[in-house]
Amino acid sequence: MNEINGNWLSSSSNSISEARLKAKAKRRLRKNSSRDSGRGDSLSDNGDVVRGTTAAPTSPKSKLLDRKSRLGKGRGLPKKGGAGGKGVWGRSGEVYEPVVVDEKDPNYDEAQENCVYETVVPPLDERHFEKTVTPIVQEYFEHGDTNEVAEQLAELNLGSMRSAVPSLAVSLALEAKASHRELTSRLLADLYGSVLSHSDMEKSFDKLLQELPDLVLDTPGAPQLVGQFIARAVSDQILSKSYIDGYKGKVDCEYVRVTLDRAAVLLKMSMGGLRIDNQWGAGGGQRPVIQLIKEMNLLLKEYILSGDSKEAERCLRDLEVPHFHHEFVYEAVVMVLESKGEKTFKMVLQLLKCLSLSSIITVDQMRRGYKRIYMDIAEINIDVPRAYFILEQFVDKSFNMGIIDMKLRDLCPCRYKKNKGGHVISVQF
Image (cartoon, rainbow, N blue to C red; front, top):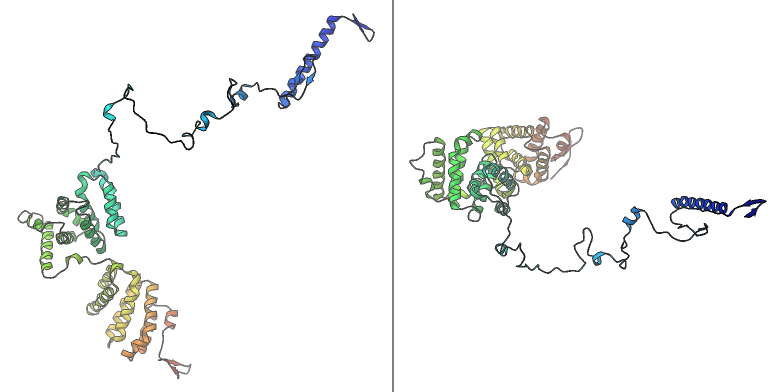
């Protein structure tokens, strides 16, 4: 028995109170460890709280995130010496040697020992042929590089559709410009031998002759144009000279007969000096400047004789040189200055008015043409003494008809400068 504060307590009651104090201390310890797990508090055997020691993580989650060996082995180094893990192909600087085939492997197949693997491109069928080749030809009309077309076609497995390439290119060219037809003839000549054979060319033109009734619906002049393509192909030696003779006495279609007659006539004319290799002409910017000027002068002379402004408009559009229309304006005004009658004066004014309204000649090109005349009028006046007077009248009429604006009219040089009273104050030479 022990006496505490005048009370006698037994040894059993002392042990119960100590157990309660230890339980209370443990509860306080668990509560503190949940708030701050880094303190690592522990409880001594006497029930006292000991701080400063770190307790090992006991939760399942902490064990999963632990990168140390769970068996307590190893030195903490990365797995496989840094060659393992997601997205790793091996240790840096490691060179893999060729894999030696084990002939004793139960999966070993002797037939696969000398196999060669290649990329196989399926052949184009008729349904996908036009969708694939048409963009290639249309892009060629823009850049004009036959080598690029040959490379693109070589990447395709044309198969039996190889002979359809020339017929597709010609059918697209029938609806295009003359310069595109010239590009098509060059393309067929360059593809011959490397991509297309002689039999492919003959099969293609045979197909064109069979499809003439359908081509005429979209292009009324298809028989004449296909005849020119055939004559050009014979001239370029991609078709034999006996190709046309092979159809003699075997033609029932009128369109085919017209086509073959056209080709035969052109070939006979070539023997007399006609150049079939230039029958389509060169595309706009590819023509020499001197040749363009000659064609514009010829166009103006034909217009003065016929008076057909629509035909002159069509011929100017066919030249395909909208950036060079200022030269047409320049030549037209020079023709007016060198003419001796009123007919040319009025007809050129009317033609420029029509071309301005139809926007074939833009405002910028019209302005550049007039300004070039203003700059050269002094030299023109040497050969044409009345050039200043005629130009001043022509510019005033052009302004009244709405061909030029007031600013361009006021820039017109005049030989005599007058004051407000109408008296000459200076002379320009």
